[in-house]
Amino acid sequence: MPRTPAPGTRDTILRAASGLFYRHGVRAVGMAQVIEAAGCGKNLLYRHFPSKADLAAAYLSLVRGERDRSITRALDTAADPGERLVALVTEVAELVRDPRYRGCAFRNYLTEFPGDDDEPARIARAYLADTRAQVDDLVAALGRPGTLADRIWLIIGGLHGGAPEQGPVAVAWVSELVTA
Image 1 (tube, one colour):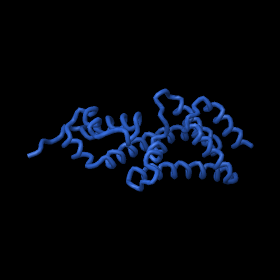
Image 2 (cartoon, rainbow, N blue to C red):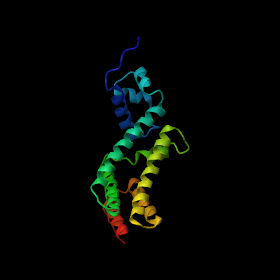
Image 3 (cartoon, helix red, strand yellow):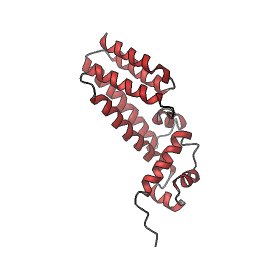
Image 4 (spheres, helix red, strand yellow):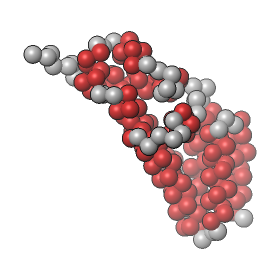
């Protein structure tokens, strides 16, 4: 009869895998590395996550929850749609300045597995689509043309793409764009 895992085992495995996946990339991390980092056995890992894709999907879902909460906190500090757009870009600008920042987990996954249509890829695409829709909705609430949403989305993408020093400039651009 199999032993019952200790409470929190799944979370321990997921946290260990998440750190490895984010630092090194999903493709580069083997399940043996996850087992070692989590301090668990192979059977226990596979009981919670039957495949690496299941583990990657859980990782991206975890990151999505963290990102959604952070964005919600930022948006809650602003009253009108223009201020909310500035708050959104400010949140991203602050995120990318963290020395531990290694890029957007969702964009990173889709770069590693560009043609995949597995669960992790669907989670990554859904997050990016939902975030873009959030920008579109805020721009629409301003009564501004769709090109403004495109510009703001490009600014956000640029920040995620490795331009943390441009954070203050990006925030200023968005502030100008929404007040113009």
